[in-house]
Length: 170
Image (tube, rainbow, N blue to C red; front, side, top):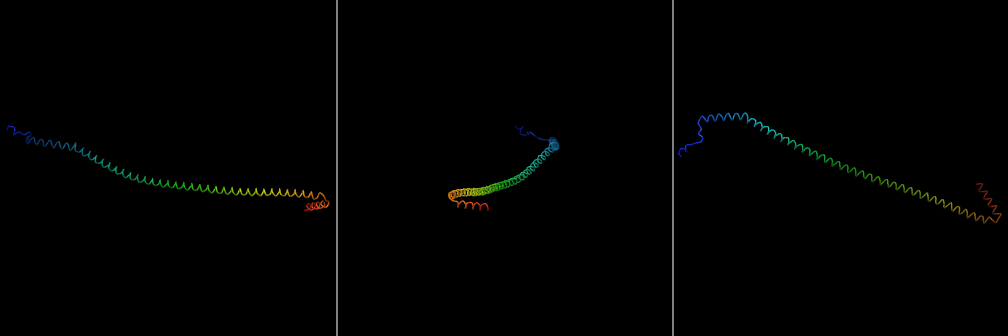
């Protein structure tokens, strides 16, 4: 077993080491030209696309913040407009109610005035009818009294003729 004690699986000789170094340098140069450069370009492209995406995301955040502020402004304006419309509607309804009340008061006053005038006219008409009836009754009574009084005497006949003549002259 002594023979195996001096055994080494890799015992490089100086020629093998030189050729290995030359092949490694050639392999490294070929890799640098054809593999490392495209990998570096790909990494740079990826880095630039990531930074562009981050910039776009930042821009999108800013735009979203601007849109949110604008939406809040629009909502505030809409609330203000709604409050103004509600106030105008209340004012209009109050105005309409007040106008209706005033018209109703005016109409009631007109009806009351018309009713008072009609009552006054009816009262005057009734008084006139009563006076006419009283006059007719007085005339009938006077006629009956005069017929009774004048039926008997010539003196009364001459007095009545005298009164008739005075009435005709006036």
